Image (tube, rainbow, N blue to C red):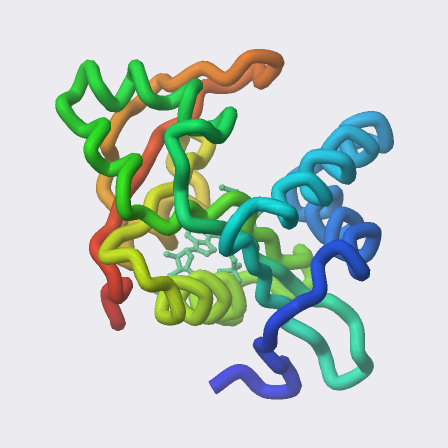
Length: 179
Ligand SMILES: CC(C)(COP(=O)(O)OP(=O)(O)OC[C@H]1O[C@@H](n2cnc3c(N)ncnc32)[C@H](O)[C@@H]1OP(=O)(O)O)[C@@H](O)C(=O)NCCC(=O)NCCS
């Protein structure tokens, strides 16, 4: 169990600035990128079935968050990754999937099991039989975590407009694998 950390539903639109402050530290976003992400997050949270969980300290500070939604092929993310998945025969993963849009843990609280707890909890309450996400295509802690939860590579070297680094698209059956 995580001591002094509570995992619970997060009203992300109401806490968007706090969440983006965590993301900025965890992922390395500058002020301009935060401003752009802010609009995107607020739009995402209007999508059908979009929801977020937060990890909160005993002092009431946000230590991490995750959000996602039932995937739709009409969402921008899906339209970017679809040709890469189709080339691998994996585009069926875009249907009946819960997509993890963001997962970030404050650097001070990383490597204590919070990221694992957040993504496991949000996918446990998904109605879909599987989950998909994208992560920078490198051997990062994020990729290590996703692999250990059962996510496998569905496409690699995926390029998003305006993102300098290639991404991997990963998918896992639900519920996610336990240790
Ligand atoms: C990815 C991230 C959310 C993981 O959250 P976390 O709370 O630190 O991770 P957890 O402690 O729950 O998970 C630990 C697992 O992640 C992996 N991991 C964590 N830190 C690691 C490190 N420094 N090196 C390698 N693997 C690591 C391991 O697989 C580990 O498994 P274990 O518990 O069996 O040891 C967090 O590192 C983060 O916010 N990173 C920066 C932002 C980011 O990359 N977000 C994901 C975008 S796709």
